Image (cartoon, rainbow, N blue to C red; front, side, top):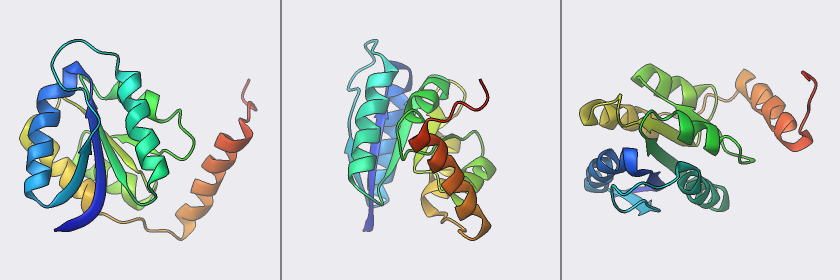
Length: 155
């Protein structure tokens, strides 16, 4: 049994892929919470990003997976939350680097651009890769400073 807590969510565009990936991960032994949506009926993706990110933030060490049609909307929405580092991954390399260098805690996938088999492989890499730490910790601290100070230096 995999002890890592996962939270998974989608909008209507990601519903089918979410269901398949959820079943796949549960069969691999992951402790998984599905925060919706629960049908292919049209919904607004920011609400599911909010629900997922709230769970990840309140459960240190947990990870999230968010799926919409392209993955872009979920990624943008998730990254609005303090402490969330969401990565839209379209390859195993992206998944690996998002964890090793950025300590990403939410994986975003696009259901309309990623086949189930590939999404499952991307998720496997994401879930099984650790953070390298070292020089990358300084960069994460800089990101946290931007989040907490709401810096507008570029305006």
